[in-house]
Length: 191
Length: 191
Image 1 (cartoon, one colour):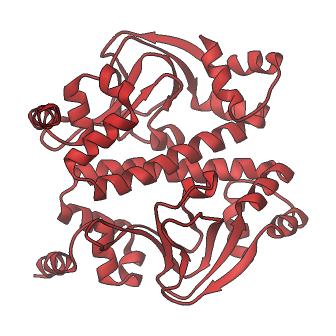
Image 2 (tube, chains in turn brown, blue):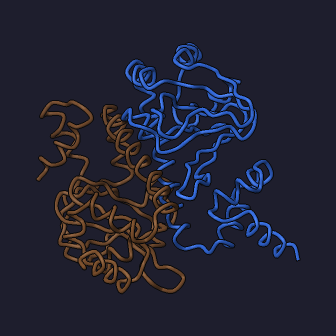
């Protein structure tokens, strides 16, 4: 399983097998059942997660008491509440498994120690955060400029795997509309 | 002027005066008049900008032909089209000065060389991108959960300097509504 993490590291940095084994020592492998909470909104987020197998989602409870999903993470993606993890403040989001999942978990202190002991990991996380930031900026553009229908079809085209794996009501929540509306759009696209 | 950049670096990393002088050698100081374009949507973005004085905005032209502002950068903020800068692809956004501005500009090749020659800069950019990513994630939550009025008042409270410096029509564009609507909200808050 750790091969997936090794391959992800090797996209950005080079290291020996010995170094990889030492780097792995900073992480714990954790498994979670479907729909288990890894973090609850309002708690301090102590861990950063790399998905080895399964699927996570990030959400918050909106003013109507409804769960609004904002992000998904499947294999080889990182997920945490970034502000809370960094600053030890209450989390803005909850994190929950969508499927039975296996993750690598690293605590804030271990991540700081890892970055200190293996400065090459600075480069790795610089690249990871840069891409995540770039994607998020593009997303803000899409939120502003796409109609709900365009948003769905662009999403389905860009991430066909998500659309197959993720329950429809979660995709609807992520895209910011009701399951009924999503069902209508899907019917239209077939007819 | 470079003192502002030095102070920003020192928030995250330590370096000697000699090292700082060498690091500065990778940057060019550039000045721009008000409303000058630093980048046009569709071009490849060759530079990453750190604002020494003035104010930049990032925008794109939406399907109605209207400029939609998505970000601002004032003193000590970085701005670029991250995907385009990283991958040499056409930019999703334009970048323009709101005020007469002075910036530090670094090309993609120079930034790669800088990171290679001064690995401590990996840590600096890791921290910069991490914060930018965290802020953007929180922003997605706000876009989903705040009403237009709440969005404006939260923005005005969090960034009073912006609201004073930025023309009202740009704040309206950034918040995703018309100048007329903004004017109405502001009147309501006074009455």
